[in-house]
Length: 139
Image 1 (tube, rainbow, N blue to C red):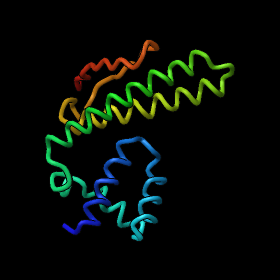
Image 2 (cartoon, rainbow, N blue to C red):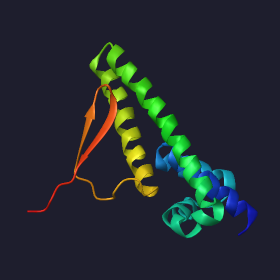
Image 3 (cartoon, rainbow, N blue to C red):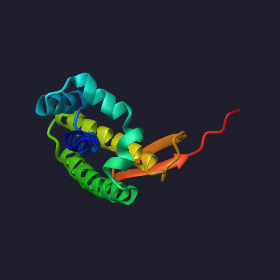
Image 4 (cartoon, one colour):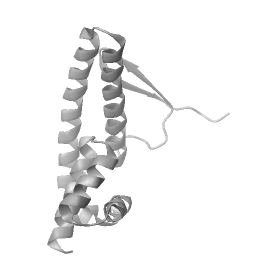
């Protein structure tokens, strides 16, 4: 694999896991590596084909768990913002951060195989994000 493609894919994975809006990091990486946005989207879409070549599986798991810890800290700070918000707009912004971070957390856990891909109901508590998963059985 070409060194520049390798670096681009590493940065693609890092950007995706950091939780920045996808269209933003796709545009940034396309500009940085002088490729089309479509090339970045294709890298991301086909990540299962190259992720093991970019990172050893152990490195990828370690990096993902490190990001999970960072996201947990970010959510704790967002909950503080929510609790100290002076108006509904500030509360809504904090909840949006928490919601996005929680979804990313779930996606990371699923990609590590630590959480089933098909979930039942999720519930979230204000003491932080507690993910309680109940399997919903089909009737």
